[in-house]
Image (cartoon, rainbow, N blue to C red; front, side, top):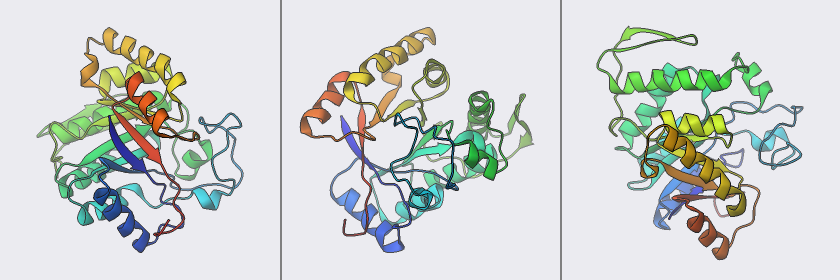
Length: 274
């Protein structure tokens, strides 16, 4: 099992902070470095955060949960590192334009020589969707559509896609990703429709906030979805972030035992030194 680290780039993330984060994560031997996404945060939101029972995030103040842009931050990290993989943990796909998202992701993959892991999710904060003018309803079906739009842009010489949610007329796209056929798409979500989405469209599943005991039956559900899609388990990597749980060496071993391929350790850093 590999180890990665996820550090939210909240208002403490100065340029010096980001430089220290990238160089030290690579020096310490982490396999991957992940950043999250919140375009905006609102002070008064519907408590619907899926990790905690009360539906609230780790920090009460919205200002403490605002983050730097994910893709430009990863491009900066790509320039100061050589080997560590760079991940989005996770971007909110259905509130984004899929063509711009494909462009930004391909650009990071191109500039990093093929080190991007693209974590995507449905999003949970309706107020954030409203702020960017996106529709909150049907975001699962919209995500499925947007993944296909991105694949066509990344993989086809002449790209085109048409469905209920997006019409992409024939067009040319550059840069194509350095990874072939494209960066791994890692979907976050623990519902049965999410597992079906992973099995049919993605290369990984991102479990956020589940301890090893809760994760075991979820992996069984994922494997059932893979079987229905006629895909072997080894085509999918399982990523887990113990968000909301203290972890130690024994707990890390338990994640490995239940079938996690990469454990993403969450750390809320307060400064470049901490």
